[in-house]
Length: 208
Image 1: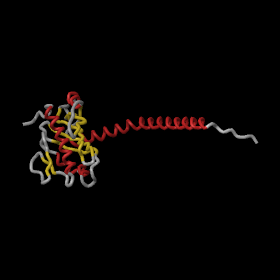
Image 2: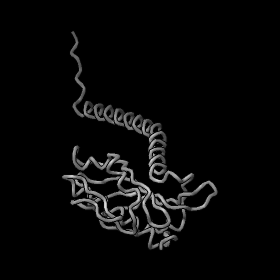
Image 3: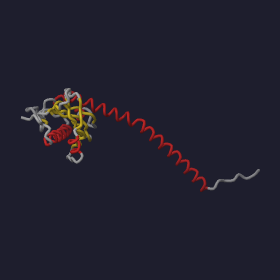
Image 4: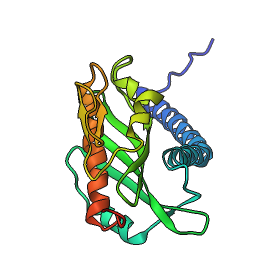
């Protein structure tokens, strides 16, 4: 019986390396393909959710349009503890600007970023607030998503709001979330950043 020849050790290592490379390459290509397939549906879903939030916080708006001058100013804006992701003009049925909607991020929530939308009329009065995403504690900061909490922001008078832990006593105050002062403070800071931006850029044209 003839003796079976053994493959040199170096050849085995090269063969295994080539096989691993091929597997990695195929896995990478498949991952890229899946990402490409799901990218557009995910983006469309996020856009739909954001547009629904804008409609919720400014129900009188028939369309929401970008104003190039405001968008350009956002590119160099640096705010401590908050981010203004987007500002759009809310239009009525005749195309007149009746206010603004904003996508904001409160950076100092208890669990991290809180993404939300607000609506504001030309007199600086808020028309609503809707939380889009958060990582706040269930039963505490997560209560920022409850309708009864968000409803408090309708009618709040800017250009600066504040929270109260002892009960609302003025038209620019809302009741803080019980046991979640950090969440309430973070939202207040981000809202005030947005309102200040609108005021500084002459958006409140109907202020008395």
